[in-house]
Image (cartoon, rainbow, N blue to C red; front, top):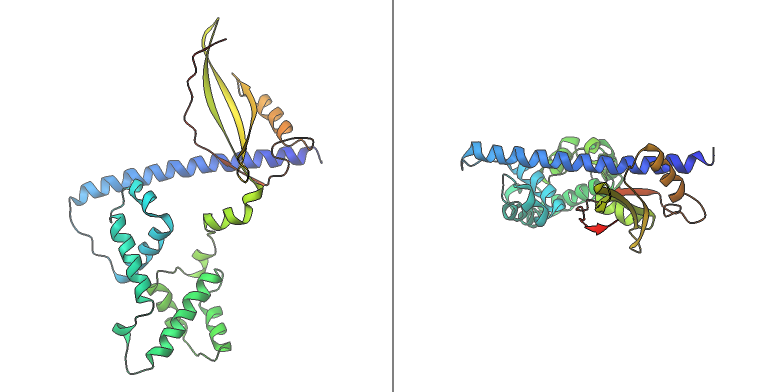
Length: 257
């Protein structure tokens, strides 16, 4: 059982890499879909509600301007980030929503609601309501829902399903490795033969190890690589828990063989 466990771990890590590739394919599809939608709109302006702007702004800020430029978004990256700056500024400005009540108290309560939701992704409206009651603030669930919606924060079922990629990396950086293939073309007596090179890189210290080279990366070869790299006496993955995939352009090398 002990010898099979490292092999199973390695195979699970490789599957995670394939899942990453699938996610890239999904992103490419969404990019194509966005381009077609923009062509159909033909310059027509889409009117978003304040809640929709807040949601898009929060998502856009997490993606970043550089990545947004590659996505060919319907709303320009600069506009999305401007919405986010306005959203941050409005966090402390409730002038449009001030009534006869106590605006200072409402600003404080709204800030508490946002902070509780962001720091406790599994807390729903009722749980936030209970926490506010413990602080002597009586707030209705509908008010909590409105505050979160206004700030572009999703309900608890959606928030708790997602872990930010940056948070995951910071928590697991020392036990993260990446792996992928690149190809080398070698001239042999049989002509030009493609060799597949599998490498592993430790992300914490950037140490790269060539796991194997073959012209036929079949199941038997992959199983042997799995045994080698999870071997307790020097395997590149022995101290790692997670493996991601790297997209590397193929290297063409016209060397004699």
